[in-house]
Image 1 (cartoon, one colour):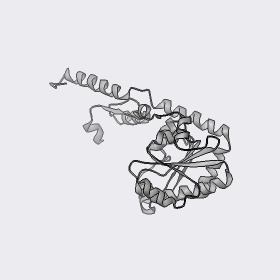
Image 2: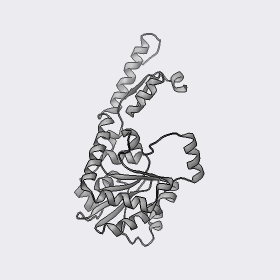
Image 3: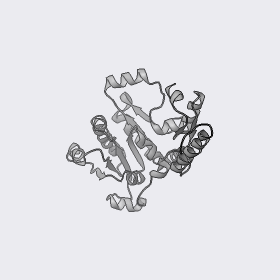
Length: 258
């Protein structure tokens, strides 16, 4: 209601937003998502494998616990323990962990301690890391959509303080949590939230996908549909042109300057 009263024209980045807002009487237009242009690798997969000292003959699993310290506290040890469990079943695999710019790589190395799995720690270059991976264990957030645009199969995990989680469940009524699934309007990739986010469940999902090349290709195909749904490149230009056109229309009836 506040948006309808205060906004004359709204440019939105998800296709479902346009329908939702128009239904409520808001003049909304879907223009595409800027990730279409910004999510790009800086090197080929082979170049990245060499850059990160990864073995090209092994399957690569990425660990992405999020970009906040609170997420590290809830998810990093869970992901490391899951990697240990996965390595029992998939002998020929390796692990890599890209460090977000908001976090300290020193802190993460300290948490890894002796690092018996030899998890590769990479500062920045998250898109190149994702592009190396056959599978991701990833925290729910915008990174899931970035991974989808790069076509990487994943399992989405998330845990909160129980009080925060309870309040969120009371206030927010949604069936899907991962952004990639929300955009797809279906569970393209498995979500393991709160009490479902266990070492056993994560490892089971990872092994199931890694052992089934057809399933991986099926997921990649569905992720490609997500990418297509986000529109074409040129989002910023379309917004700028749309703003100018809207203001020109307004100028016909109002004394405003463009």
